[in-house]
Image 1 (spheres, rainbow, N blue to C red):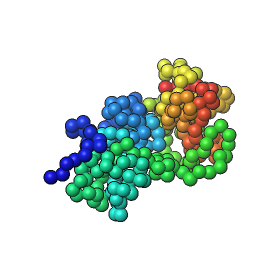
Image 2: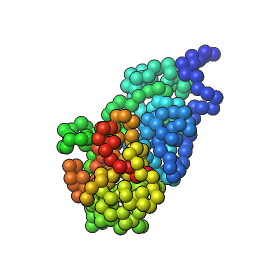
Image 3: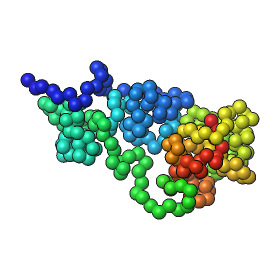
Image 4: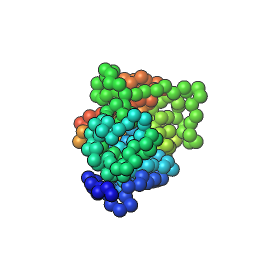
Length: 260
């Protein structure tokens, strides 16, 4: 007989990874609150770089905070414990490894573990920033000649407005087809009945008021610290046809208008 040391005492029936189908209006933190885990755990389990969610996609929901891990050849409990900063007894107890131990291909949960920076979703090798006011994360070019616009997108491919329209469609939060240049989207959104204010939230449009101004989409918010956005045609991050993401300090973020 093996006497099991309960380093982690999960609730009955609360060791299985569940699934959740995203709905309009969901974001990572609102879903996390339903399951009493952190948004970070959900992002790690689903390889998400954004707090904004797309309706209809299925999420994996771990039962507790930590890291979902698929065992590979050569793994040991000791190596996983060291790599992911978690006590090995917690790994053994939570996953009932006392008898059979680890097996190649088995999916386990490392309760309370933390992903190393290099394994986190969206990680890129550090590089020198190419402009002030935010750190450059990644960028890719869109071929305007073959770009397919969503129905209703009347904005010219390659521009910030075209991308903002497409990204909001992905999120199930469509916007108007004739809102003008990026700098006018706050006024246009207000006229169309959208909530417009100075408070950032994931999935909202951020608007740099002006002519032509600029518009993009808020991907995540760290209140009081920074926001992360995605955008197209920011001259400081590649310009026309380039989609990029960047992190904006909180003080600068409060200077934008947000359309919800």
